[in-house]
Length: 477
Image 1 (cartoon, rainbow, N blue to C red):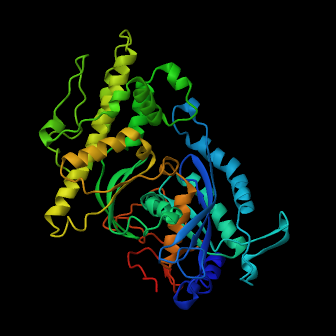
Image 2: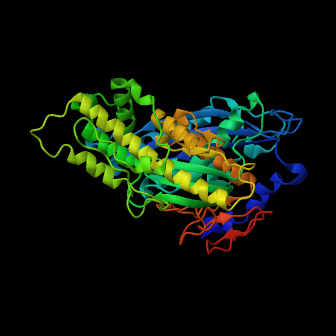
Image 3: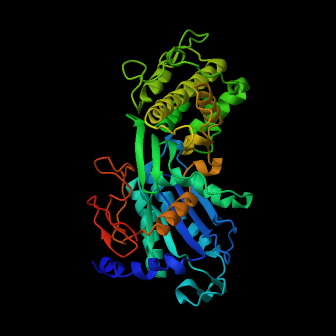
């Protein structure tokens, strides 16, 4: 109670300078991400577009990534992520990454006399550093114990430095990653992209969903998986398909990425993809030289349902190896990997087409306000997926859709995306009470029973009001 009552008195002090003539020329945040097996820390600064700032003078903001590192736990002997191993890695590595991030904080600019934003001599290598304006951290969704490691560290930094905390949604951060990239690349000119509204396909080891991103805090789920995530399926199937000697050379547990490399190395022609021009062709089975074929998921009565399903594909792969006396050649393994990715990625694309068809039906100006499509999450780094989606959209009449893929290093979990999301939420007038707890499950869609970015408790609005999470969100001023 002491922390809560003390904290609730602070938002006006820290957040009110964001409005009117007192808007800051830049915002600096230190961010932490520990939702799964990656321990990530970043320091990000966003410069506004005022004449006196470091940003461009054409009205577009810029960003500087001062620090960005991560350490991934070694789970190879378990063939996948072991929660306790990942947790131990967070506990062993987060402190030293935060220490390195503090060393990378930019020097204070000399224009502020606020002692809270200075570190005096003898504290950090005898340099005067500018402290973050707030701390960003992943609150969920993810493994609760792992999340708590990062969340507790972030609370300690916020309390020790007397700055606000902004605890953000991990999936929201994936969706907003291209806006971070746009700000980092503002030397190239142009506005922040994508602008709202836009579509986002979130594909990772824990999530598969197609989302209509209507605003910073309003995300409508158009399609999601009814069983396992596509990244989980690819990892599990890859452990069956890949030869032992290839698996033994792996330096991590991203077996889906290893499968992609194996298939392309063995058969570069896989990248010469020809998309199905009709729905009938898409759902038809393509029999291989070995007499088997992988069928499209939900090809029966649910062929037009806004759902994803991947367990059937994993089971189909395992059936190919049921007979231990049958030797599976490298050529057949390569074909199986190719067909698995093709069918899975066409399944992703099919729901995008269905969603776009529905949007076009209900929008008279669809072709003049066509939304961008952001593809993010670990699977978004797959080069074959990028080819399939582009060509699938083109042949089905949606060549005007702009596909946006983050750089490969920002497709997987990282703290830079958490920092950017923290900045966007902070600028919108939101911070988080120190009483907040990690959330294993945190849907983004406000229409879900227990979801919505702002529906969870412990948001603090711009004016200092404490949001209880009952669905009646206070609006930041």
